[in-house]
Length: 243
Image (cartoon, rainbow, N blue to C red; front, top):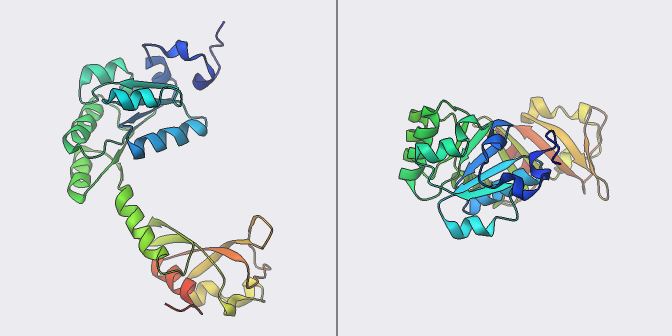
């Protein structure tokens, strides 16, 4: 007998056959469009224990993901009837990850918002696409290609090993400490006042990451995570390094 309180993804696959609506009503995340971006997102959510309802109009893609997602089905997400049948209006989150078909992306967003579900995230492939989605009422818009391009522009200079822009005025960077930051407690360096950055974590060789405090002393072969305005973290990462 199936435990009614068990996580949806732990139940027998036959339980989901033909009707994912109960899944959606109990907090599943719907991912519409299972191309490279959507499939990667759906797999990662599933690995984190999130119940995923995957939707795509390509039967071959759907079949390839049968054994990886709790529920995956072929459907046209631009049709109200299909969205209702799949429980999309009741889903806790809906991610529209449709790639190159702008019309399908925009129509799906419009239909879902009209159903009363405003918990929508959408992938945009251009600024006009993002603008239209915003005008429809989509509050969470991501542009993975644009974001990756900006990230790569920072990484390619070689000053840092990772770069994450949190907002237009704040970023987090993984780098190595410049010589002037080595051998003294952080409290004595005045990094926030002098450079506009904060060292928030450190990794000594052979050890794991650890949060910093005023007494933390950095060594030349450490890795550090710093936070601050994008131009500030960029400048600090480049100290003592050749461009």
